[in-house]
Image (tube, rainbow, N blue to C red; front, top):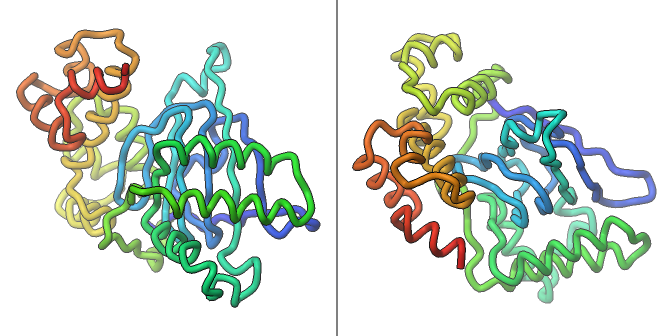
Length: 288
């Protein structure tokens, strides 16, 4: 399936779009657009899909997504509960790479700006002090008009460009097939997996969701995501375990089973393989 192409609207008096979203379901599906996206999750948690990368997102995260890169932020179920206290709060800017003119990025002063937009085609997780600075500029952009609006966006992008270790998200070889006309298949696979990853999901079961044979499903999924479905499920389970570790409500063994792993040995192995840390070290570093 190809992701859905979204048309990003902007007001006639503005050359690019900046908005605040207070609901978790805006663009809550696998999609892409021609505009570059700079997003700050002031409040909200869930699972982030960017290209072939899967991880948890949380309050405070800032991400830069390049033109044409498929992505999807799936908020946790609690954000869809009318009676819960969890509320989403997001600031997001969308802009075309050439909205400031076709020659702007080729000016010698803008070489770093051009480089970071090229890197954003894999997605960039903004980290460290840069994250807070960009978040503050996005907040300011919500309330300003005139030429200063453009200079604030440039300042935010230059902060990302000056970040010492910008973290690329999607793999360098990720390419999505934009020819495939089946627009709902990957969404169906993702949604079903997110709802059921805590228990074993049989190949025949997920293949029926995708409406293809089990053998075809394996080839299909790997050709689109560059990973097997088993790897995909493991990443979902480790991401959920990270959330539980941060919340600090369960013992390590309890959250192992709560995350869908059958035994503690495999949980520890895959957790360290994906995060580079043991569960206890991951938790201690987050709490520091």
